[in-house]
Length: 135
Image 1: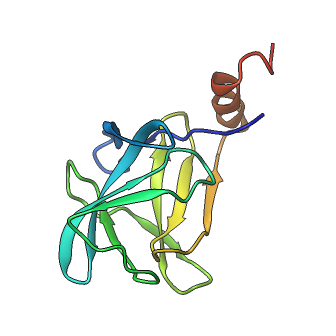
Image 2 (image 1 turned 135 degrees about the vertical axis):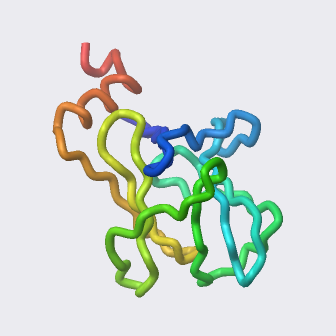
């Protein structure tokens, strides 16, 4: 298996965060509202799990800065479930197929994780992306 693409929804309004117009890694990106150093804008993240490619629009790409993240549609901040080992909040987004993805809000920190409450959801995610592997 090569890569896993994660499609995510806002935990509050349940709307998709996938933006088909802004591409990263040749795929539609994950769009989030971001506040960095008092300025508001957008950050677009790769939907490829393990890719750290991102695009900043209206805000600066300042390494080690903690980013306030929110839904670009309902504007509610993403929930924080824990604190990263770098002491920044870890935000949570819902996966379209069960589970959730957690990511550190410190720009440049590579801590992220995927969690599933139901192992069948994990299987569906892998099967959907690599059907021939599971045939």
